[in-house]
Image 1 (tube, rainbow, N blue to C red):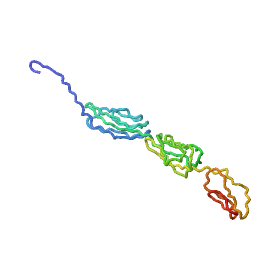
Image 2: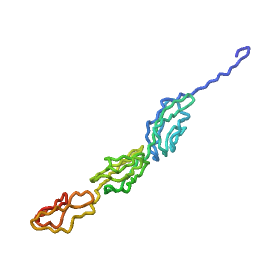
Image 3: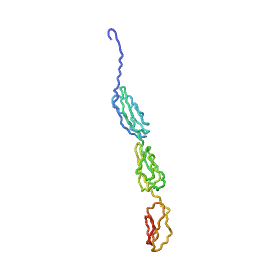
Image 4: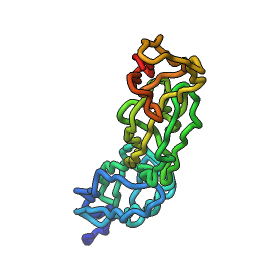
Length: 250
């Protein structure tokens, strides 16, 4: 303005907030399916945050508060390690941070098998199935190796087959594993030989005192570990407990 008049002009002014900065969360995070998490709260400096956003979407069951940036809830699905980008924004700008989240399955527990087990060589066994609770088992392992002829399914933990060898009483450890961890169980297997059968000798036998006899040999099916006789033979005759042969001179 002056004595001659005036003129005017509109000046536009905007005052923005200080941009957020230094955004961070606790990371990495490993959660368990169906277990409530401890809420993740953002740490941020600079100006006041007007809104938060996240990408990609969190696993099912977890929620993200766009006003506070808090991550909370109970995950209901299993997910591998994934990076989630959180962005904090106000009128002055934005800042972002990558939060890593993994959701593991519930750890398997309560694993068991029928035990002890006594099997017979060359006879098919009734399959042994595992009982287990907790999360879904991804794989099974066993140590030591089963007797020849028996098989172990690493997917479902089933033991089956026909044992081809005699095996002493042995403890086997099965481990059931998933993304959450593992559990183990010790069970016992013994594989006995086929019982001897169709056992016979030439009989009856008439011998003469002081005259050597023709050896009496057993006829038997199956592998024999030892023989015994009762009552004792007449003096002069002998009985071989390894072969079952009766020989000598009465």
